[in-house]
Image 1 (cartoon, rainbow, N blue to C red):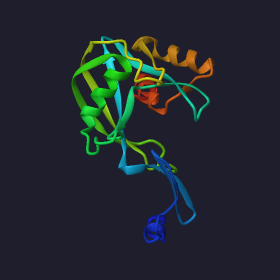
Image 2 (image 1 turned 90 degrees about the vertical axis):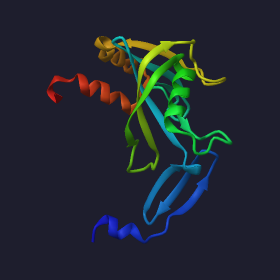
Image 3 (image 1 turned 45 degrees about the horizontal axis):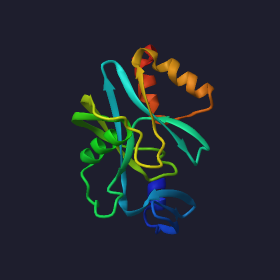
Image 4 (image 1 turned 120 degrees about the horizontal axis):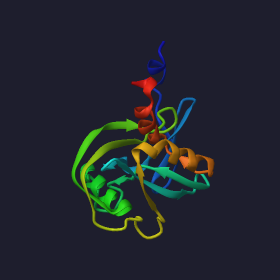
Length: 182
């Protein structure tokens, strides 16, 4: 019997639910998901040979993290059913101060499918124009980094050595630069 067959008919049980996350079990499996089917948008923003990244203190890590700009889709009351590309464009501008002329959807991905049901849609931002300082909404404390692609590896190594958390999505930029993976 496959794992899929084993768990197909076992009901999912909610163990705890907050405003944004819910913990569940199905048989012996424990996992976490987003409430209200909220999803996330993540933005790959490259401008004239520089990638636009954000730094933000993350309470679960207890330290700052280096990430691509990102945000929740349809998380605000009355925004249920929000278009993912519109949310991505809004989050890019709020967090980084850059406005995209066009957002290209790359696809849907799952952050850690062995323990989290959360999905995110990746977008590539094109035709960037700096229209503000960024920094996010009040209380987010976001620092914007415009990192040269040819200095990306050194930037990440420096931040890692300083104790920063490095978001897993940085692997797409690291992997694309590794000659042995081409």
